[in-house]
Image (cartoon, rainbow, N blue to C red; front, side, top):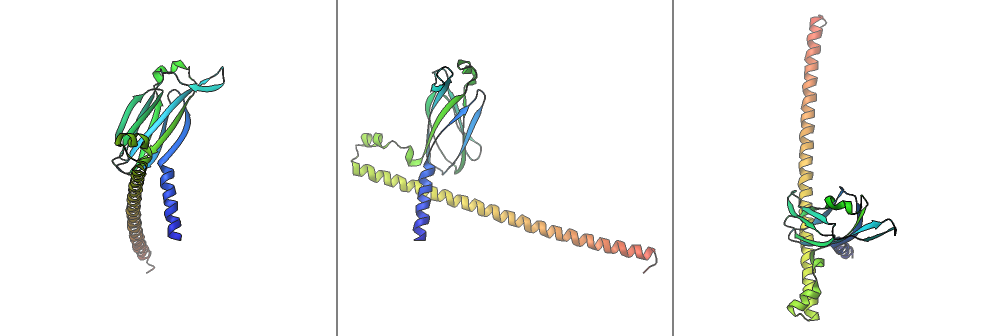
Length: 219
């Protein structure tokens, strides 16, 4: 029963992390970055749209075509895997090749920000990871799949995504274990060094006191 609960919680965590949707505000030279923990060989699709604040109507309206967003993605090794300029509304796609934390950064093409004179830009961002990034309606139409075949394909890809997530969790556990062992080893050596220093200081103090007493002819 407990194992079943843990596995269910793990599945819930996997599917919760596979889709994230939010909106945020940025200024003219401001840059927003987000961290996504992604397994290796996983496709990520990001959809975004921008809105400008209309002071007369006091609401956010769709941005004009003159505005755009610059998207940059870095892998855990700080290597740029995507760097491209998009329009006011767009979609970016990339595939991870290294498991770990990927940094997704967005900022506006500030050279054209005079179009809204220093106002705030609202960006709606939707990130889909793994099999959630697939458009199964297009896949079914392209491959001429029946409903049952499409469902089987979805289940196979979901299992594949779960396996990737499990492998990534094992990878994180291994790195954490290596870090813990390295830390414990350093603490052990530091304790040994401290002990040797204390012993050396004690011996020096004893020799110093002995020579002092001998000089005073107390011994």
